[in-house]
Image 1 (tube, one colour):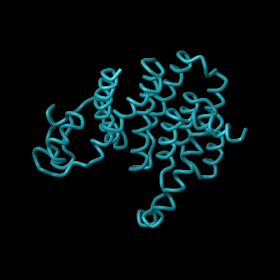
Image 2 (cartoon, rainbow, N blue to C red; image 1 turned 180 degrees about the vertical axis):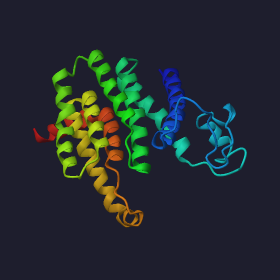
Image 3 (cartoon, rainbow, N blue to C red; image 1 turned 90 degrees about the vertical axis):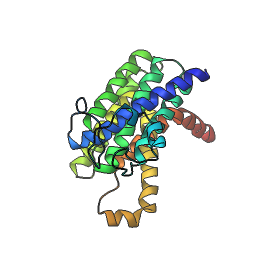
Image 4 (cartoon, helix red, strand yellow; image 1 turned 45 degrees about the vertical axis):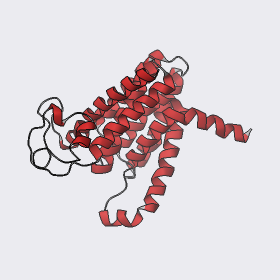
Length: 247
């Protein structure tokens, strides 16, 4: 089992490196399938030794090999986070199709969290992939029926759509929650929304002065993405614990 988790972690690191490409290129409308990776400061092409996930950043001291400019800590953080989340999904679901599907969902949510935080934008492509994983889970996991998934896709996205008519909600959030609903079902979709709303509210109050200086709203999609990951990993356990207290 330990060897299996190490392999999953390393594979997750590699996927995390690709997530950095998505986070940088998708909001800028750049092609993600062509073109070499390059230093954002000096534009020098990066070669394989410069792109080993996590370890290149550590060995180079967090600096570009060519211009010595500092490389953002965000890059290795995304790689490490994705590796850990893939391990978490493997530990939660074992060597199953569900584990792979939820790992892909977690990777998409990482992209959503960072692009929405940095650019106030949720790429539609990530919501599409998450929705596709919902269909995979429907076929692979009979414990959650189609009706629960359909209700999950509608129970939050429809109220959000009504809020969007009043200009209080972005279209990316609506698509994200509809896609997540297909994956999670209505219970965990409500958990995701509640968790994201509470976390977003806390951050809003903690960073209120910073927010005012930035002159922009704190992106809700980032916190929904965090809530979605938490829902997959321990949402069922939390719901069971909560209703246990009520009983």
